[in-house]
Figure 1 (cartoon, one colour):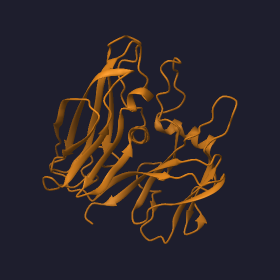
Figure 2 (figure 1 turned 90 degrees about the vertical axis):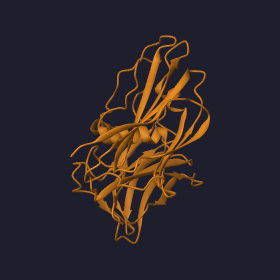
Figure 3 (figure 1 turned 120 degrees about the vertical axis):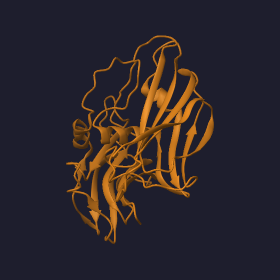
Length: 300
């Protein structure tokens, strides 16, 4: 078994654009998407840098395999890798080179020949990146993208990553959100608009339940605060930061994990269900975001 790493975009000048690139044809483990620039006067924070990557999408003949904004992809990276994505040169030095790298994964583990995206003909698999030109906090941006292929792989599964926008329900309290059927659910990331802040415990989502065929199952009212505590499993914990640095954890995000052992033992099988919902107990009537990680059949 071997892998093949190739550059599919080299030192591309950052611009406000919708970038479109054909991806390689061999089975695909993951992409590495790197945005680089220079500090403007002081240190640019993670929140300032990541905001220039609006959305990353990968589609197979128009069908989305990856579709999420950069903040959610950052959270997926932290969930999968048990570590924070790389952000170099955390120093307040004018014109210091900085690089933020995000992994775009096609399996629960990387370099896995049994779980990656299957081979496709040229032009069938496409990367779309919605970008804004670097400015203000970091400038002179360039983008580099590498693809890691597994030429000898014959995958049986791949991971699909999509974010659902949950509109404000119009009231606080329970808000039932339909989840996709047909695959196995690996995990669900919930990103909140309102996060507990100074002098207030208020959160956009106070707790979450999962309804399997209209009955609470697996997660029967998991509180936000305890889901925050689960961050220790994902390499988060409590980082020590200077105020100017900002947090390096995924912003305002908690996870409902159905694969805690990373061996598939607890996956939520939604292939034969008639109904699957997340019941969000809303502390604030506002939009929120659910990122679905699904394990899909590569041969279907």
